[in-house]
Length: 252
Image (cartoon, rainbow, N blue to C red; front, side, top):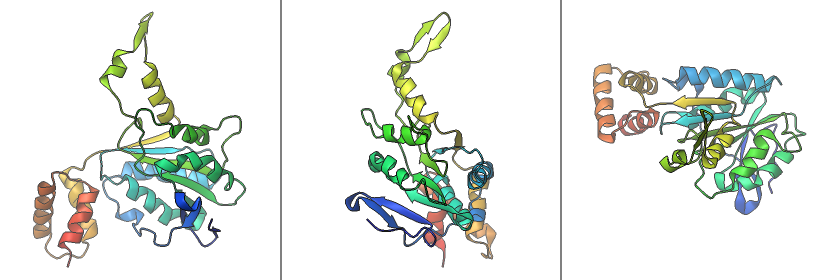
């Protein structure tokens, strides 16, 4: 297991075959101010993170919604923005969540503030990895450490698949709807994220704002926008990921 020097290392990743953490050598350089069209989400996430860094009450965070709309990029930019203030980040894959309690045990006595980052998190029927996540989110007999929070991204609002049959199993007693156990299980996990931020597909105006941020010095805006719109049309989607792909395609 690699010995992480958190003074000089802003982020690490859990590697199953090593049974330990490995320092991330090349951080994504995405910058906070370059993320366009998600100002509401940025403001809420920044406020929650600043409270966490200050030792004030703060929430675990779930960023959910349409693919390619900036959820993961916002978490990466968050680290770049706040690492100088003591923020550290550990990325843990969904399949490794069973190790989460042991990871957290090694962090609770350190002076830094840690975000456990779970990217593209979701669970299928029958998976049990979410149980370890639940204990870290709210604790069990032992409270979770004050210097650790979980920030997760997902395309699913409740992190689990939702089926029409689940709703049909619900019951009504004395005029009140009682959800089926499957729905209760879905909500019980998502509810542990006190801050939930939704992300939606970009309008054309927001998409072009993202394009302009990637090409600040491009002289011909009309040509740039026309090419960017054609590129998005060919992809069938307008979002931040499409803007990045257009940048790699079109930039000289």
